[in-house]
Length: 513
Ligand code: BG6
Image 1 (cartoon, rainbow, N blue to C red):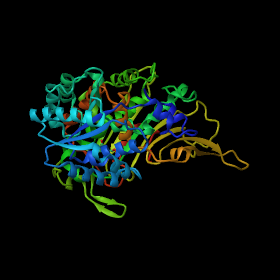
Image 2 (image 1 turned 180 degrees about the horizontal axis):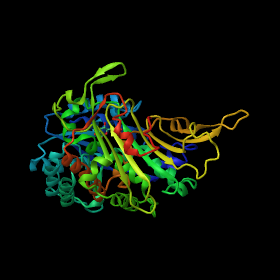
Image 3 (image 1 turned 90 degrees about the vertical axis):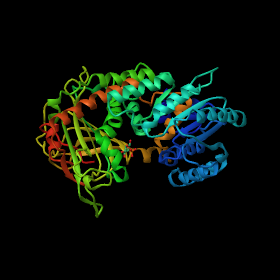
Image 4 (image 1 turned 120 degrees about the vertical axis):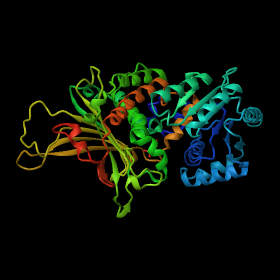
């Protein structure tokens, strides 16, 4: 269950204090990280586990086994992790790692080697006896997707994926979850051959962000927004995930994916479903996900000939950023000189439901934008009759959900400028997380790791959600392929190509966060 009370009561109680602890008890378990020598373990997973330790949210019986090909010892593994916690963890988490270091061990094996999994099973039983992990196992697939199939096959063959005698066996699958519908379906088949859906946790770290969860709190814990949340009052919605970084050392990966697969298929579609969904009957994993998947089902696949009119794609060219020269995308390492991969995409989507019939949703994501900013902007319609003639200085209302950074919610509205004349100017009512709640914000992975240990799948993508999102993205990619047009260009450090403005239609323009 998604715990909205933790957000709502946070002004008076510590959101990570007794209340949260009382409602979200993780059972004792061993976490097996497959691909444990990779960056994710060091940067995110173990620092996040230590964040949970700091907040008293780890179970008493707890162990982590790092499973990977490299010939590391327990000591090597612990040293890497200690470095990771120091560099990437929340303040004061290193001491928690020192106290728990014995709980981390390394298991060397090839992902395709059956004997390695049999030895893992024996090791996990020893750990159960030594550390009280009670036979519960959480497998984290943190390898490149090419290893998933071998891992899933071996976990099933050794019986490690089976739930027995009330002991849980769960799997967390990292993104990318396939690269199109066909590969996502094939992966879902492989997952299903080893685990039941309730054992599977497909991670999308955006769902672990407090501000993304706050979309549901804002909509369903308040009486004033929901009556306006429909096509009668909302002109359009803009969802933006802008990053200032380029592709950096990930050129090879990015070439194969592009922004539409890397960001829109997962993070932006997930945010879209939370904004557009109907109220669920309950805050249970399936009730919430049933409503989310209905949103995706209500978006038609594009016909190839319609894609160019409903999307804009582009690549960044050489430019300057914070006073420094930065490379264009096609000059980055691992990127083809004639690459057709997009680093910017903007898409117009229509959710064909009674609620949203005439309200377009515009999704935009890009690298090398002037600023890092993720936000949802609900643009309301003009009042039916404009009493004040000052239309130029006064714009329609916007409810802005700032996901990151500078997390908060703002409402833009018109106010009278003091003085003898009636002049209207836009002003803002602003709620800031930092000011209202204070304290440290936990990393998204903390919440998601805890939920997987608790067994709550609400903030994870279900098989049908992933496949529906791919269906839409596939139709975009197919249209681009058919048209064969080169991506447009934008100078690194700018807000993207001109044509993206015309995508919105008359009287609308993209926000510049
Ligand atoms: C990842 C993408 O899923 O999300 C990256 O693969 C991207 O390309 C990252 O940079 C953005 O995440 P965040 O949390 O920094 O917005």
